[in-house]
Image (cartoon, rainbow over all chains, first blue to last red; front, top):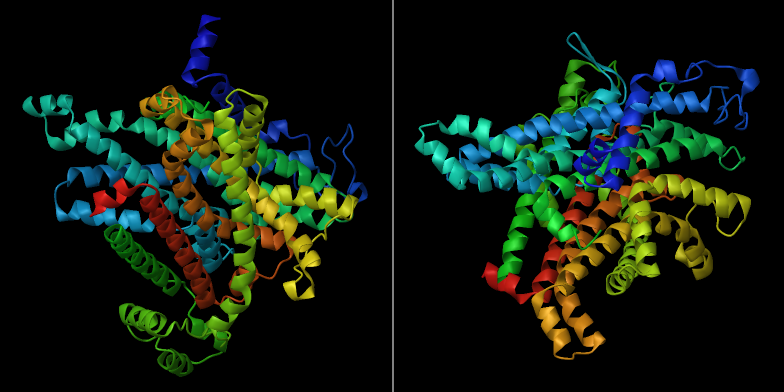
Length: 297
Length: 316
């Protein structure tokens, strides 16, 4: 019981814990999609097309007779992969740039980096994501031995668009750490500046970055769905929540509601989960913020 | 105030320069040359070289950028698409007002309702209104607008015919039909930001109400209305900032919402351009959106400077 309470506390309260649990379950079901999904998500069966939800097909079937539940489960792979890898790219480069700017602080280079980052932060994310994927095309591109799919393009672009926010966040917290007494003490011990940055400063400024990254997962899922919805992200027949919604839209007027309602519900559930988790982690690991949010929740 | 304005304006111009240069380099780095798209695969090398010379594409990127910028700033001329030959000013003039109207109506709706709801929620903390506002705030940020749009079309346009399922009726066809045609799109567009701003208003107002000077104000017997007025002036600062950012972001979501409701705004211009591989039109649309985004942030900063003179003093 005590252990459970500690676990709930780790996630910053019951809401954060619930978010963490749902996010964990979604992640597991997407990893083990072949085992969890009752049918093959690509298996076409014209005889069973557009069946209403019943006990054999819990979420019904689509216009080709494919099982919607199985497609929703497999579709989570595309959504979570795009959102997840974009965040990994954003965090890796964002933290590196933020630390680099701290390292060269006090010079023109620091000023230049920070001004450019601020300027690039004025990019509206969704429009740029749609336009850039559009510019670079949805077809697979052969680049040497590598095949670049539209999912990969979306991941990289989204990751690049995340970098400015994360770099500024790292820089602001790192700058506060560098000015603190324990860093001065480390310097007196004769520890090199780079070593201090990586072994002392970095671990101490990671918590706001992790919180921001969790919230960015939620944004990434919505952006992936939106980009796929306008036909520029994950390409059919590979299921993704966005392209399933886009397809379901054509059957809305004729009354086949289950084609669009279930993928949309999956997006909402995932976004709720990551938002709750992010808010919980913020209360727990970003105490300065939690004091102001304390009135709010 | 003037100093704050000049400073923010300078930074906005700098942002736009950096971002437009980035965008320009990206559109010029696509693997297909516009000459290939227009002339087809059979075009000879000389034909392509001629095309590039005619359109100035053989010059270095920096020179191309300078020419583009000079025309835009001095003449307000966005240029002509290489691929379709259409004047981009006309295309933007046809589609931009539609998107702008949707966004402004949605923005006004979201701002008024959310500031009202957030204020009630903070003033009557832990009351029914407060629970309702908090529930709305969580739901609103989690339900994607495009899904909400589909559900609302199903409920109010397919099952009942209260609203048209899509399409845009211009104002010239009558006020009633016009409002009905934009009601659902504007609602879907506003829900997310309504939630965000409600949450921010509530949190910010609660923080201000807990300050010492507010306790002093209450202790000295000021009425509720007076207290609210003083508190709002301070509490609105982060709300205005968030609202400014929201206004810019709404244009992004407007693209998706327009698609669903089949409204011929900027989204049609952008997606048509993408399908026709008209990269210069794509670049123009994105640039227009980015300018709106930067201007909205600038406006938010100005309103904050006016609400709180200390900010303006700090910039002087």
